[in-house]
Amino acid sequence: MALRTALLKPTHSNIAEAAQALAMGKLVAFPTETVFGLGAAVTSESALAGVFKAKGRPADHPLIAHVAPDADLSGWVAELSPHARALMQAFWPGPLTLVLPKGERMSLTVTGGQQSVGVRCPDHPVAIELLRDVGVPVAAPSANRFGKVSPTRAAHVLQELDGRIDYVLDGDIPRVGIESTIVSLIGDQPAILRPGAITASQIEQVVKTPVLNLAQVRAQGDQTRVSGALDKHYSPDARVNVLDAPALSRVRCEQSTLIVGWTDDFLAEVSEVQVRSVVKPKLLALSNHPDQVAQQLYLILRKADEDGHAQLIIEQPAHTPEWEGVADRLKRASA
Image (cartoon, rainbow, N blue to C red):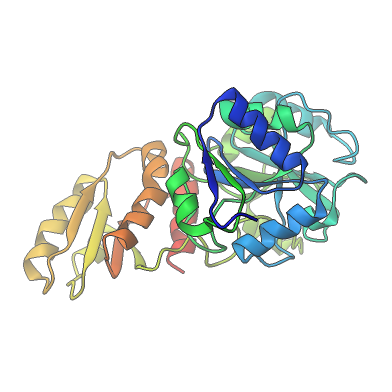
């Protein structure tokens, strides 16, 4: 591997070069609508091993196989149920991963040794062109060191993986900003194993049956492992505290702190915190909309470290389905 990772602009010729590199067993980071992924062709065991090595990722932590629109999944998954076909029709390309029975062609390295595999079709023009050029599924976890903040810029990938991977393919900034919703179709009922931009109610409208949440799945004894679902994940070096307005009213900052909020009640408390703090915190006010907060979330987590803050205080999201993806990432980042 080269001492430096090559950064490629997203031209057709460069995308073709990146696809050829993947086919040859090299590692290529590329943009999706969620975050940048670190890609390896599922047909190359050496490349798959390289993903785990580059990230410092445990071998039993499964990867998600990314496919092009209308890709033939025969052999990669064992079967496509009516629920799977309906969700693919409704949400692909898009930020939805389906956990399906593993096909005989899918490597157990991808699945973390399980007989199920997560598959999704990303909604990003660079990713789609790349996947079509490769012609086989591409396993692609987030392109960062394991447990750290997922990248939403090519520069983020290079900060963590320069010299560890072969190429970074640049492209438009991910419009979603957090990882895909993961839905398991292994059991009798669809189950959300990781929340994201696509909510349970949206899925229920398609499958016409109630969708289980992670707690209900675990209560039934299902311990299916999926990407990005460890208790501590998505973590910056700064200590992360997730607080509501009443809790913020009791805060006194004694070290460099960034406070991030979006509701009037929370933002109104910040000025009082600034008055009584030994070290005056900085404020970042966001739009009170879950999609916009999600799009900026990982950029903010990284900014806390880049600006040298020891502490990051973020507003507790509302307990509504639209905020569930953001709330999940903040819960793990602050664990």
